[in-house]
Image 1 (cartoon, rainbow, N blue to C red):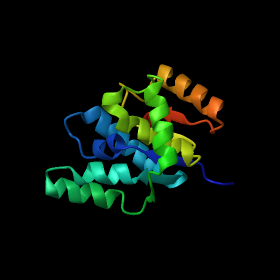
Image 2: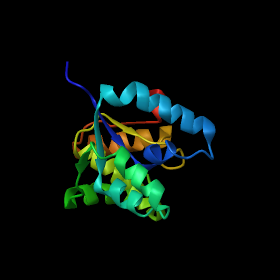
Image 3: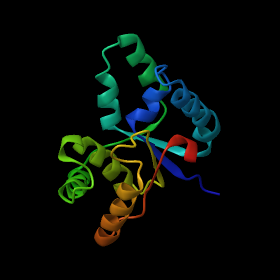
Length: 151
């Protein structure tokens, strides 16, 4: 049986090391232990860029080591166009357009699940429904946007 695929946004990777929210950190570690080996894992060049922006160099090194074996997806013009579609339809606010790019990378590459802790713009019913509608209208596959405990 073919493994399903997941795209991790930066919030999941950083939650592994964020002791400010112990419950979220614990749930992320459980997800990591139980789910990571069961899926094909993808990130994008955006995740790497965001992790490279971490000011604590020791933490940055740990974060980058954590993702070292994951497949990295590039951002193409088609992906940027799809992300702009999500923004123009007010699914994701312009101010947080990078979240739209995360979604578009996963959709364009046929990923099964986008895993995120971003409940403000991504992991919510309204976003899921609207992304699904736009994807359907444009001929893209369905993407399920979930929080780590859901897998």
